[in-house]
Image 1 (cartoon, rainbow, N blue to C red):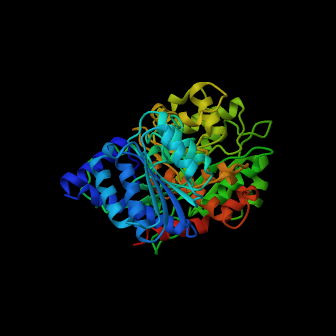
Image 2 (image 1 turned 135 degrees about the horizontal axis):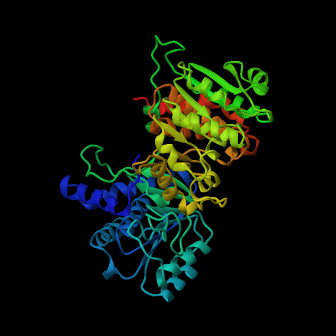
Length: 522
């Protein structure tokens, strides 16, 4: 699903009004119905509701919501920022319709021309069950101040659940962090597509549960926009998964080689191999240093094992590289989990990456081999996916051990993809996937249960399986990230996230597959 900027959202509205001939009041009506539908679903016990309206079209949406709720018999307290003369034309039209429908029903309506009026209104406000925030939407680009800031402060002091219309008031739609005072929401209903501040931390924490409502606009024929940011959904990912030929066999679905493991870290190789098997790879071979081979073979019985030459410490030796480059059976390779970070291991990884003419995913210790020399990955002769966490990305590109800040993640992952010529997965909350041309996808799945040892090795195996099945690196990375997070989300529906282990995560991949396949079914 495309993520729009505030300017692109306004352009979409103009297209609907000017090209399709849909009146702006009809768009408001559809927006209001989406809000009311969510309100009735999420807060069925609410009886008295405060609706806070701004002077612009977001306030018009709020007044349309108020009209529908008044018609359903709710008790309402409606406050409008500014004066009646200051309303937008559509806001004024919505006010007239609201007054006609509400009549003498249980509705309090007041304007807030001054800060004093705000204080009087809130002090007189009877207890409410819910607050609808329709003060400001995607048009806001500067911090709230004066009367508007006071309304937000007083509304937050009510300590009642807030449902935001389009965007919590005080956020800039295009910024990943608050720009000033903001009213935190429990739920937010936006329209047609999400915006950056809905999705990226820390601003997303103020959004609560996000729902994307429809304005009734067709998908085809929309104005061309910069599709540089996408929001991953189950339906989108389901369409990207490898197709399974009913007459296929194990050789049809790809042969992934997992180059991983070292003494004390055989588990990383086992987890990556098991994940690849459960993600659908037809064949999996774990190429691991000789001292680890027996443990790996016992830990992953569905995969094959190849013992590689090792150094005196038991790590990968340079003699292993020609053997790996000569393996014609490999459809793709996953390199890195548990390999270690010695100089000889790093040289092995670099020679393998540059010489291998097959798709490759590099993770963990394999990334360490390119610290300070990320541009060398431009020499790769085939598709490549990198899967760093923020600290690894900082070390790889900045020569720093200080992790990338959450507000820097979007630009950092774009820069990483540009400099390496690879698809880059920046792991963490709201995992990002970037390609060299600048496109970025934001994952909607995953939870803090993934913050445990080995979960990254599982992701490596999944992405590797998709590369082996023939997906391009962008689709392989997006599908791998989404399924990885979906498996974790399904687990926490049944148990505490603290108890999610990497091995347990693998066991939930089948259920995650089913969710994604069903979402994409016609």
